[in-house]
Length: 356
Image 1 (cartoon, rainbow, N blue to C red):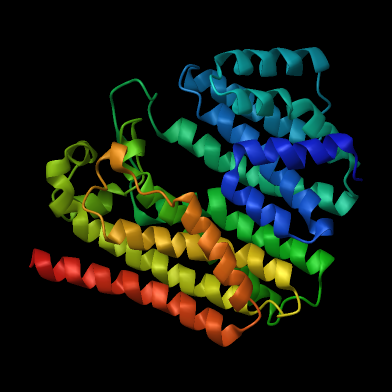
Image 2 (tube, rainbow, N blue to C red):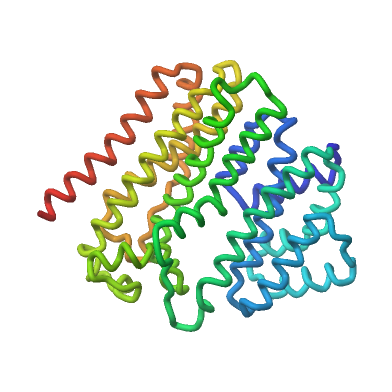
């Protein structure tokens, strides 16, 4: 299925719109790289549509549902698709994002070239991911309305993290079994459950990292049921004076994310040591996620959007270098990752002690 257009979509284009996932994709075995990369690219285009504040949510939702229909095999009108992507691209200020939107049609054409199995799998994962995006558009207010809406209860947060990331773990595992049936030890059901936790851990980390920014576009992913335990409202979180009061919630969510990362570690260690590329592809996001949680646990500025935690590029390169040395040793890997978890747990404990 490899051709020049596919190479462009999953090479220069994907690299321009995703620094971290591009690294993961490039280390994947080539057979698995194309369906996984294409699924990501289509989902990334859908996400770009969802996050365009210059376009009213109702129109974004209409365009998102139209793209979903095209991904699911509905025959598209070339003129209509061109009109939609042109309208979106005109509203997009970032050249790489604009190019991504203009590449929707060739990406759909590449999708048709996949094997029947891959095509069904890609359609299924994009369907679930776009349901998460639809949830954003229908649950939260228009970014410029000045209002904030919070999720109601824990189950909504759990469902959301599944729709936008946990499902990716299941998809990843499905593709692994399809292309490398002997790469994973253990029961497939258990492995899939661990993979879902893996995805949820990464998404919860992202939500904690981006909390302050999300609040300013009207989205509070911290459930109101949690806020009410501390007599807080979503609007209270706009003030940095609320940092001390919201700290127990941040800590609770961080500890939950750490527990899910333990499932992610068990998943990664269940990959046979001979499958080095698959191991690295799973290891890198785990380490980056754990180090991000440590930075969050060490910060008192999580309600200040300008001071959002971000991994520096040189730190990512250091992770890659260390991981290549450790990748074939379960003992070294587990010790490394447990140290990262323990460091965050200690930081949470010290902050709690100082607060008391």
